[in-house]
Image (tube, rainbow, N blue to C red; front, side):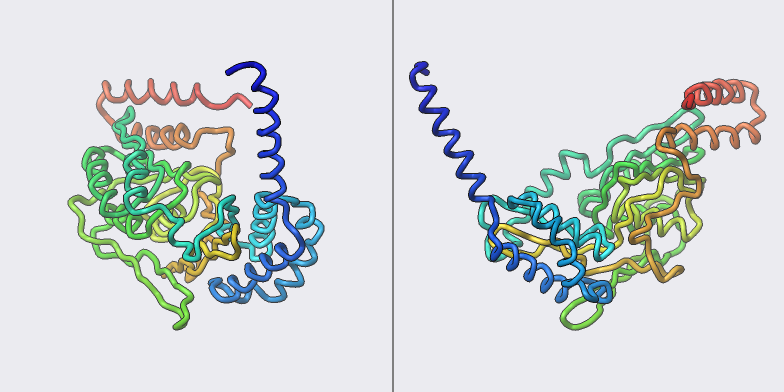
Length: 347
């Protein structure tokens, strides 16, 4: 490109950037219409209407925070955060689209083909399947994807881990997914058909309930199971942990999970704004409640500075050592225990 063209190009870019900034600037009418649409959408669809009492006044009391957000993306983030705080629901969130949204917001969701492509890219959430020293099984699971695609992967993982002495399932980076897939993986840990949880939905016809049970699978894993969770564990990952914890089938180590038990969907509330509104809630048949807002609480609470995988391995191997008579196996266990002890954080 000739150097003499650069000033013209720079001027054009400056105009484009300036135009984009102006396009994002929100006037008072747009703000008011967006807020009214958000409140109306919550009133129509939100799963816990009692949390919406006096919401317009409570939102207006935060006017300074809303006014400080000058452009579309910042305004969407601020309004979404406020609505999440005021409803005490982390699933509530807003999104901003630079391009006008279609009248039917479903058109903006990933197509079935695109979702399958994404799930294939992450191997249906199965990040790692490993046999650790001491014959401990380890499954690093990052998502609960569509059951039809995930089931063969999960069944293969469980087959590989079937003969281990204990199993560790790592959910520390699992942001959730499909409840049907949660029920499928849970099925490997129960002989009898077991009621796991219900999903209760708010609909125009009133409340509707979907029940989730275990189902027949190829093998039954009857040895100890530990789950690892963190603040990043969310939604369906929390449901898996909470349900199995209440059924006393697992022990859990790590930090409290994210605290999201309310699924839902996106709603168009303006030309450039959409709002995720939870319209369902998980209900456990034993507790008759869920983990919303508080998270799943670990049986073994650990600081984030310590590695839950290290700690759980250490516990399992120390228990295994007390039941082992073979001198060769004992030497291997003792060596591994020493390695794990040496890896403990120093402060």
